[in-house]
Length: 480
Image 1 (cartoon, rainbow, N blue to C red):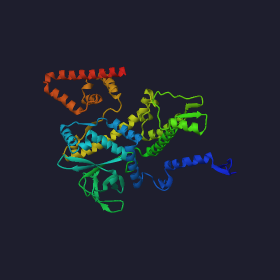
Image 2 (cartoon, rainbow, N blue to C red):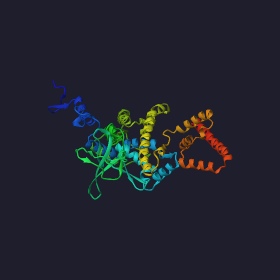
Image 3 (cartoon, one colour):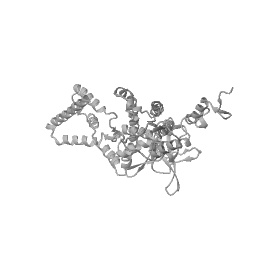
Image 4 (cartoon, one colour):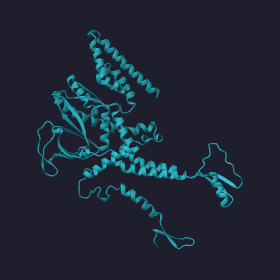
């Protein structure tokens, strides 16, 4: 007997054949399995290649999907927002040891031309672009000594990265192809930042033709989530699950709307005439709140109680959402459902978040350092003076109180510890001071205004202020 179908006989009709439950289930899950299977339709063929990344067309599709979901989907937008908010906050600050270096860095970062890229808003936008696209290309245009203008190139316009044939890590050129707003096709070849100090080295591209730079500008490339040359969007492993989550919620909305279509049920005794009378009473009429319903013994009106399976639906939705959480590295309580988190779990669950955001901050620190070194070289700053200390706002709100506690413990052993500029900088940043460098410069000016015999008094006041800062933070920590 064929167990895939069931045969039943309806009254007044012949035998009818229906799909079994197993076949219904198989059909319902087939489309989902097709979308989630990574090796279907040749999407990824692992049989005879060493897989290091997406094909160019797959990467383009992945970037476009990531951009679309970042704009339209709440989960995707929240993931990118949290990564940028926790990592950048109010923006990164820089402080060089040498005054000449600091002047060059300030002129570069605060210039009107670079503000759209290097200002607080520009930093956040660059972070969003890196997370959404998986990579970002900065192009640096050199002007007068020390003057460098920074812009971004759309990753979809970079069609090839050309490296040393014997060393893939030795990237030499970036090939850019794009169209102007007037529809004209353009092609440019930029040197990599690593090749900026060297003369052009003819290098074969993917077609075997030797190429050199066609532009004076140089490109710095940052890529994340990759083991190859090109980066992958943060949302790439999450998009398939986000799609299913959206479909699941759409289905739930359909169920709720269907259940809400009829709210009351009326039973009555009588025929078509009675039915028409009751129908005429309620059709296209909405009773006011608090209205009185009057009926005789022949009519009974009761509310319809519809069981929509909300509890099971919540659990099912959570299973899907957990896959999104795992893909982007953010625990589920950050998706709008605070019932899934508490203080105890937060301290353990958030530790991986802290580490990944610290790693992400370090990625940007290294990137900005490399680009700033290009600027300092242009300004003829000696290489020994290139070091710049870069600081991001504290990731976790507890950092300020923990810092105060640490300062208090260390000062008890080393009384002059809180006189160090690095300690003062960390304390000011944890207090939420916007321009730390300016405040520290003001403190130095106050010291310079004092005579040598009064300097100990200035230091004593500064130490006293640091001690009071520590006490206030510890008191606020204890009150929480």
